[in-house]
Image (cartoon, rainbow, N blue to C red; front, side, top):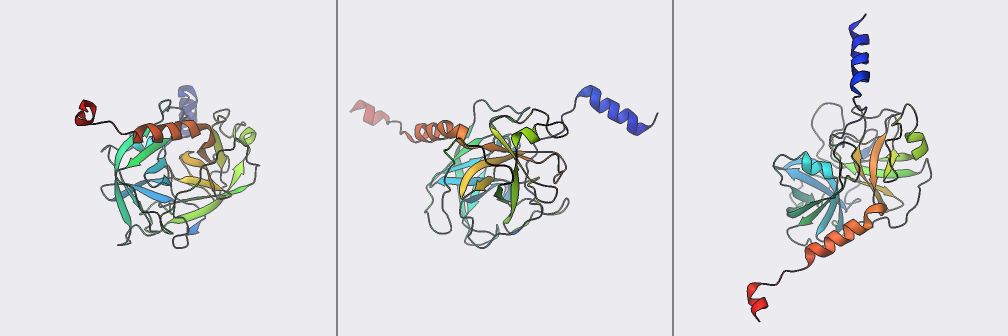
Length: 266
């Protein structure tokens, strides 16, 4: 009875899940983005260090992944945008005023893995800083469709995260396939999308970044297998369309001004 056999039995008995939700972000098989070609990209940072990605929805709101907040022990982000290089002296850095985790977010299953961040001030929109449109149509993207994912996560399994924004095209995988035996076995809900190959994938450090299909924010980087680039354990993304009401209601309610005591007295 070998140690390896005992370990496999131990794993089966405990029912340890075959994926985790550590921040994803190493862009496998990708390349550097062209300058200002992804003006919606946001780097969410803690103590000036990149933690997660995000997408700019308008001049004051960023969409990311809920587990990025739970992975942040300081409970404080700054948003960096307007530059491909995180060391660019002309980059724009804005504090986060409020964080809104989806109320049904499940840390175990990673269902509803969405986070809305309200910037402390409006950013000036330009060719360098520009929102991306959310997908509003409830549609199934055909398997094999190539969509773009970008981020500042590690480009190697070990080593430092890159200073320059990286991107890669990943093919959509049919939910029926991704839920099949040998893949994620019925863990992929209608609110999720699978995408990636053994050579093209998102990974540690890129959570919260957008999956863009036909120029529209289709989904947000959520989770995946602990070893990136596994053919049968592709990246898992949270779809945007099922959460349109949550996104719009949150932004609307958070921007309603509360009258001051003097205004109430009048």
